[in-house]
Amino acid sequence: MALTASIMVPIGTQAPDFHLPDVVSGKTISLSTFADKKALLVMFICRHCPFVKHIQDELTRIGQDYATRDLGIVAISANDAENYPDDAPESLKALAIELGWQFPFCYDETQETAKAYTAACTPDFFVFDDHRHLAYRGQLDDSRPSNGKPVTGADLRAAIDAVLAGKPVIDEQKPSVGCNIKWKSTP
Image (cartoon, rainbow, N blue to C red; front, side, top):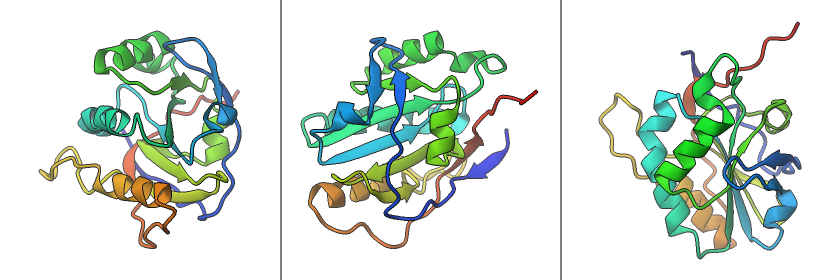
């Protein structure tokens, strides 16, 4: 495991489109899936990373708390499933069902979506406004698996709430940290 920080992509960056299969429903998910939503949360996560395991219950709560709000949510796993079988689509599907996630959980087999978003670690969070311009990229909160701080989702929730209210997101955004995305080796 290599501790990796998210890349702080410039605020205002346009959300790249994608077309990825939801591991639970099999439906193809894209930006247009969320066209009627005022805000969009894109999360790069996986199953095996201890940083994601540490916050997975909070991801469930966020999905539940915002289910009736004007927020689209999509989780994406881009890890190399051949070398990390816990991150294969069937395993991801089992996790989503086990945790009762009400948002799509997609598998980025080619890793092109992760590259387009400049995702670097799991977890990596991106919040976009109604024009799909980046408003927030950074951490869920100050909690880490070994620091004893409670998992609250405070930073991410504040960003989501600001975008939904049409207000600016705070300027000081802290990078997320976690395991690096497990990139496929190139021949």
